[in-house]
Image (cartoon, rainbow, N blue to C red):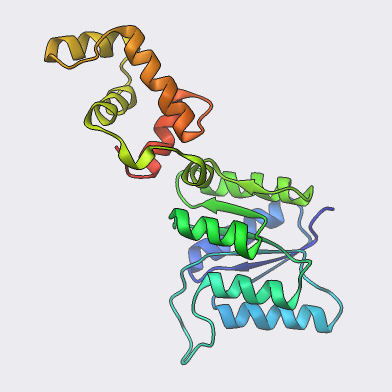
Length: 222
């Protein structure tokens, strides 16, 4: 199923305009937007009334109200209401929020189809999410996936933080081992450095060390 009609719920002008442009650029025929949750719900209702429903809702989670006494003030409630109105609508959350409880609630309880964290690669990940969701599959960006599946990421010890910081600076494993030896930090063999990086990749659900560093930085852990 190729999406033909998409609704973007985003309160920031620049983000709204940029997303609409990108979606039209990849060939989506009709792209509408709303800067308020109430406005987005009204558009969904109108689409259903005229038998021209939206295929996909892309929604931020945080909204600054630009109307008095809004009925819906958060993207989470907007998404839940949209699913009640139109069970068939696909939903991708697009937000700076990478809290595990929020991602878990939306993906497992509300039943959204994709979660993408805004940031350096946010738009690229959003376009990838749209491709996947069009195939009736679920999509989590690397950051949200790591947040849900990581094992010990919130208990990084000083050694692991320093290790990741050194990798982020571009040091190779041999150089890191030598640095640890010079500072009296242990374990400090190349093998121990390699093993700890492998364990961290598993914990973060990262395929490569570069992705591991990207995730750790995006989660403000280093």
